[in-house]
Length: 423
Image (cartoon, rainbow, N blue to C red):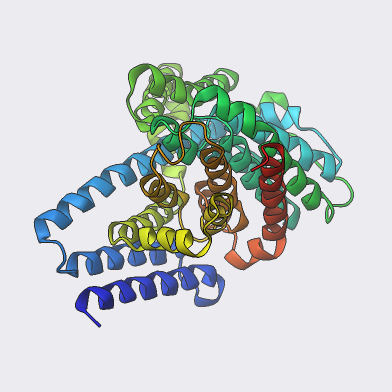
């Protein structure tokens, strides 16, 4: 066995061990953010130790990946800041009043519908941050709240899959020229709705009875709370518009919105007794461990991609599966274990536009499967990872309570697409 093969074997072993330790965080009593960071760093150490590429080339590869990772993490920090500004102003009371629904099942269905709609306009990561934070302010941390949070992850991923700006993998295929705007929205909206609907209905089964909701009185909202709420939502919705108009990455849009909110709150709360409502204080309330966990996961996945391990996985699927529709289906299942971005990138490099031209059913199914398949495991999507970080949900709890519903919904949407398009 060559040194190159030994290093690849070691990288796979480190990833598997790190992945396992994250799943049993409740047993090892070590924060999963620490494990994720250590795993990501060790994988890059091994990648740099591979003699296939010289140090300069390795550094260039790392810098390229780091640029992409930094954009995602900075976007996450910006979105968390905007959401926390709304929270500190008690802005989520507006949603609390809108969601004064007692029936647990009706509440879950309503949350799923709102999440699906928001995700198609914003993106699945931002939507998950908003909805999970909202749920944490409205409900106590009970099994029911965590179950509804799982439905948020599924609905956010399904809602993002059918629009060019809702999910990063659909955006990749859109920007790469494999998909056009109208075609992808027309042909994937129904499978995405079915995916979210089937999973949501399954998750309503264990819910019984009614919530004992006690919304805070309107007078408790902080000064300018309504303004901050709507300006914050507008700042989030503005991000995809900013990206289309300027061509700049999304994190620039979210920081533009954050800067605007910062100016507004500084001017509105110049009194000493309102220091707690100004952005510097608000930022002390953000859970940075969630962002660091996300950073570690992205570092680990990108190291595997840089080493060519994920490309090897994609080629293995091509050899063993063969049929395009089942390759797309397998990409979705694989994205539950590893990040969907490098898997889709590998598919885009494996198949050129002469084999599968623009708006071919293969690309549409890849977009759907990569966007929704990650819901099957909590670590398989950005939505699941941030949900895991914000709610401190364990890997095995998600498997026990959410994974089966997510898998059935995913399969229902995929098979419906194949049937409708005779694929």
